[in-house]
Length: 107
Image (tube, rainbow, N blue to C red; front, side):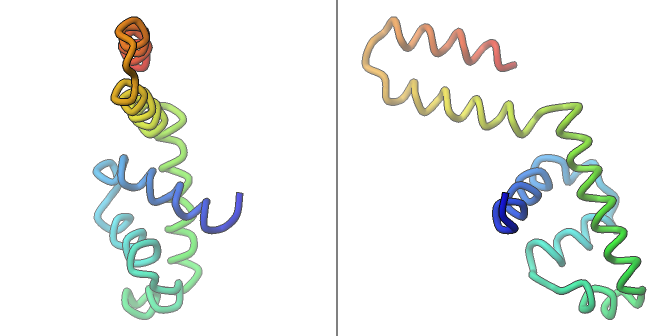
């Protein structure tokens, strides 16, 4: 996985789980991933060391992955979206019913 794909994945996880983070964690994540601030810029703005910012981001990203591993909300959402898109494209009623059954299993 390249750096861009990794960042997109982290942003998707953040979008799902941001309400479970502290204000400080959200501020650092948004500054780094959404506003493209460097670790140095964040450390200057927050009057903390670069190492403190790096550690906070690293711990927060790990927390997001832990939430996803336990709750699987992001993957379930992606699966639902795929199935819904297939339903929208399908013309055969039997296939639609099969997809609705599959959708119910996602929950």
